[in-house]
Image 1 (cartoon, rainbow, N blue to C red):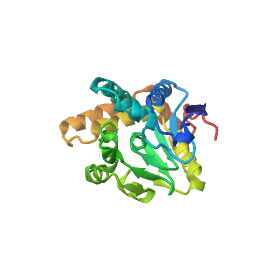
Image 2: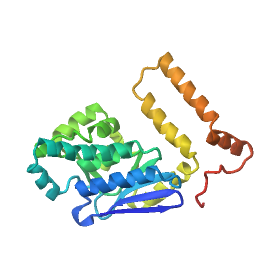
Image 3: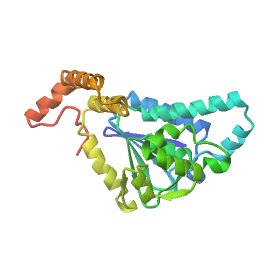
Length: 260
């Protein structure tokens, strides 16, 4: 159902339900939350890649799970939705850089997984659909991440029409960061890993926290003071001192442990 491989500072988390196009249910959601939590607390891991096995990245919700949800009352549905919300928030707040490897269809909740990652690399075979409206539902739980990625106006269109859009459009509106061929997909990701693994782990965590804190805020004296405090703190941190020392001494920083 879920494969987790850790090697050379990289955790590769792979949805492994190819016969179901990696559709998720409550069990897979729980497994993903647990995996993200473990990766978050593993100091040996610097970057996480999220991928899917088989022809699809993720087809959204599993049909059998949807059948069970149809018989649930409000309280059961709320608990179920809160579990999904927790999983997405855990991914989104991961202090380490995250990459979505998008090689095929991404439907409904699968779009939330992609949008909650820092970088999404896809191929022309990828296609997206926020299909909830055609089921009489709403993409509520994934909406904070998808709207952030594609913007409000695009969300108005694709949430309401539930139309399928291709990888080129996904790149254009921000759901994908990079579009490359299937043959060069892993090569492109390896190039990103080279850059990401050269960065300080604590710096990455603080950068991600910085982005969350700064995005959408007015540029005023309070923001200036906040950003000044943040850079002062990291300059005097052990990692900041090591990074500057390694640069001046023309050597690799201590965190560059992955084999080249």
